[in-house]
Amino acid sequence: MSRTQARRQFLRDLGISSAALPFLVGLPSWSWGQAPGAARRQRLVIFFSPNGTLPEEFWPKSYGVDQPLELSPMLSALQPYSQQTLILKGVHNQILGDGDNHMRGMSCLLTATELSPGNIQGGGDTPAGWASGPSIDQQVRKFLQSREETRTRFGSLEFGVAVPNRADPWTRMCYAEANRPLAPIDDPKLMFNRLYGGAQQRQLVASVLDYVRDDLRRAERLISREDRQLLEQHLQSVRQLEQDMAAAAAQAELQHPEPEIDPTIELVNDNTPLISRMQIDLLVNALANDMTRVASLQYMRSVGEARMRWLGVEEGHHSLSHEPDNNEAAYDKLKRINAWFAGELAYLAGRLAATPEPDGSGNLLDNTQILWVNELGKGNSHTLSDIPFLLVGGGAGFQTNRALDLGGVPHNRLWLALAHGMGDVELQTFGSEKYCEAGPLSLG
Image 1 (cartoon, rainbow, N blue to C red):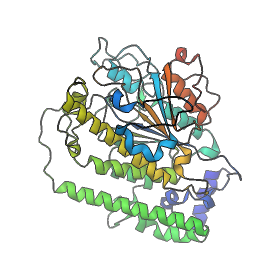
Image 2: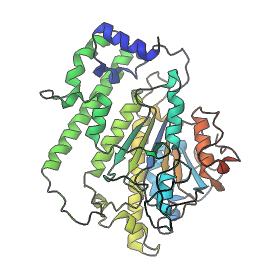
Image 3: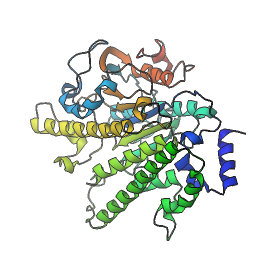
């Protein structure tokens, strides 16, 4: 009998509903079928922000294997995690073919392969369709799900923040396979329902915790004192998430809706910072409880005109990114925008660092590889060279506390290195094969 089958049979024998399963699967006492001394739980999180960066504000002043990392002021929120951070310059998206740079920047970013022929017309001369292969997060997902000891309830979870309700190559970065994009879920309520079975949707039930409380009490006698403490921490976190979502819903009901205007312009709700933190908290809970080991967090979209009014920015993000560098007002606003993204990444890293591994072997950040990615190197030049890749955490075993200038290598080789670091050492090529001839980058 497999580990999953054993768990479900045990639940039935105890009279415990499957709704309690998400609260139990991450505890050491629940690790039936896992051999003693099993490998650590490696996790992967892709963190995306759009429209390029400000190179002068992003890249550090010095590079090298023996040079401790010095973060720029724009990235100062990440300073507490600098010793677990790796910045890679000189990594290019060299994928050519149909579509404009925003389309290829977005949909070829994680897939590292060409767009399929299609009829979606961008700024380039030729229309295009979806990406013609899977994304690296889904490659890692496939590998982990192929093994019983690393299989999870959800192979991957795709989170979104302020992603518009549309589907095209500018809005999708994750692909299950060729021409099969995966839509991120940007509503915390929908994600909560997916993670916890939608139990709180039932009428007359105020909380999913109320529904499973009796079941969890029956399970408590089977787990250790340490496990009970972890379980209580998780329950408190979920309760807080429920309260936050209820408060956000009440607040939204008091606000006047945005007026109907040009549908090509996105007016992102001012609750975006709150939604971001809710999504991050849900993501961390899912990783902590071993619901998944692969996740993505997509902010907005390529060519997106998000208006970040909480930063004092009224203009659309994409329009600002097209302004020349000597436009000091626009430049300052772009610095604020990118610093905000760095702060959200720092919040994610902090939540992971503050969450202990169930088996006591460090914290989640020690075993989670976060990659902050962008579809462009620089917004006003639309360049696909020098894509800003910033890695935080120890999930893939890369050497951190440094910045490397690799001089111009295809990003296919980075994804190969990531796959190998996550255990998929048999993978020889990823994406367009011709860019993999030199093998994976050496980052260990």
